[in-house]
Length: 609
Image 1 (cartoon, helix red, strand yellow):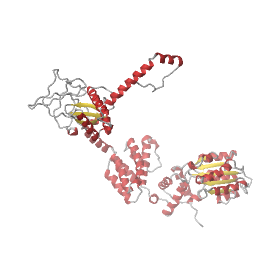
Image 2 (cartoon, one colour; image 1 turned 30 degrees about the horizontal axis):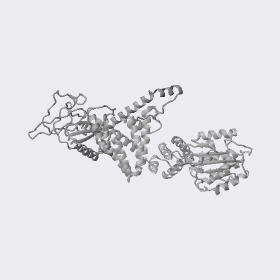
Image 3 (tube, one colour; image 1 turned 90 degrees about the horizontal axis):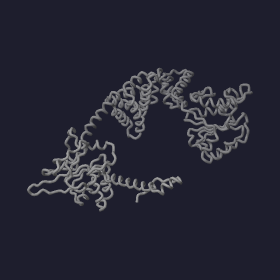
Image 4 (cartoon, one colour; image 1 turned 120 degrees about the vertical axis):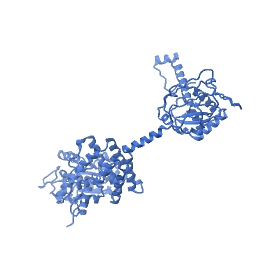
């Protein structure tokens, strides 16, 4: 006698034998009991969840004649009458199953529909079951629409599909749709235990857990894997044999990995990764098991009493949950999920697994602290040092005493900054004291060349940034604040733009920059966007300034800008717009129209002349 596989041997024969689809069973049972029957049903769901099984049970419920031959429509078919036994064996003449994967054309559908005009031969109803209905062609769907909408009273349609999105809306609207859900691992585990008990096969609880997880919601897959595991284990189900058959990673490896990650032990992480390679275990399976354990750890951390006492790994999970903070557990879980997607991109999946594990290790607290300290040391050094003045003769100050720089610009207790090379190879020298400008505000400073005997040079104010470039870049941008250097820089840029001495990116650099420090030979500009700080643009702007009579060397840093020509232009445009709006709003005729007729001014329609 040939062996019948478990998936077929233990296929449910009644609604009461079905597991995991209580919502569908309840709806169909109530409909059969109350005789509220629809003419078309659509069952959707992944593979192996019971779509064909529900269809056959429904056909038996509609055509069951009872043990005495006097039965009617029922939610509990007897299973012994001629109709029930013929449907179970697949030879009931009034129950037709069409596989749309291999019979997807309009001719096959028309051949099926030609039988609809004939009344049932044996049963009470004709039942047309079309499996994988989404595989039908567009013409085939169109051919069955009219019959599907208004079939004869003795005809019932049952459609099944794993991809309902591909079914036309015109078909969906004519059917009563039921979604069969993937089964939970606990449901699969309990059903496998009952099947193996009926078969007289001994099984370890942990082996059943492995099979239930490997089935991924499909009861048929779970029973098929159980058949394979029984053959592999020689008639029994033992955890080592099932794990070896599935290629699953032993949870002990996962526990060692998580414990090593919590301790920052890179040597153990690499060693366990090597063991996985030597044993031929799946890299994707290792990350999957790690994600499953981390998920349970997160649950225990959030709700300590939510652990499963029947799980033999519950103690290990609880212990590991105490080793990692909750935020790191969430981070490791996310990185494991993303790491699985990266395995296929690497030429060697075990090398990719090692990199994912090392990436997990790189985010441990000790490593993060060291990296933060290193970054702090680097950030403490300014990226761009304020330009130092060239060696000059002693400064001849004006009659008025020198004005000391404000505390915000030159703090008295500012810590000494490490000495670095000036930007743009500006030669080091003595920084000029901050004094009032000798010329009219906004005018270019006049430079006196020292005489042969070593005359004096008049110094102009030198304004230094109080913060480093990195601190300036991280500071929040402020609004427009007018400065003395801004007056001069705005006039200079406007002059260069009017003469078309600068254009494109060079003009944008001039408009978006702020002059923060200058002396007789060096100017320091500040921009907010790194993209403007291009060497070519800086050199062209410097060349244009020299052609205009400003023989200076430019240095550009990145930081917040409060007074640039662009901001000045925008402020001036806003003032003009405000003045234009006030002129219109204060006009007596406009006010009369708004008061008497409810007129309103369309926003954006007022433009300054």
